[in-house]
Length: 150
Image (cartoon, rainbow, N blue to C red):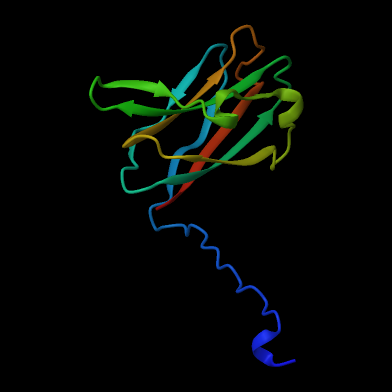
């Protein structure tokens, strides 16, 4: 049998992974949620040059914020109306953590969630649920960073 008639292996498929850029961004750094219904909103960040993002979320519990939750909301600006809209694709529909899942200690909860840049300007909002037991001794500290890929 000649080499020409032997089956040849399929060529390897080269998969290109998005590479992080130098435009990684910190939306919120060690912000404290210590009151029921409290909201903290980051400054807007221009994401028009990017297609995807990886959100790095860290929540640390201090004390015993019993029956408390922290919600993280990614928002994109409607540049025509000037209104902010919640991003609800995939896990962003309800990115909510209860105190039992967060835990205490230096590490707390650390998760990464990826999404698409569906607008030109993005920000992050964190919210403590109403009716919780947050106060000066029982609170959450939240940091939200992101990597952007083009």
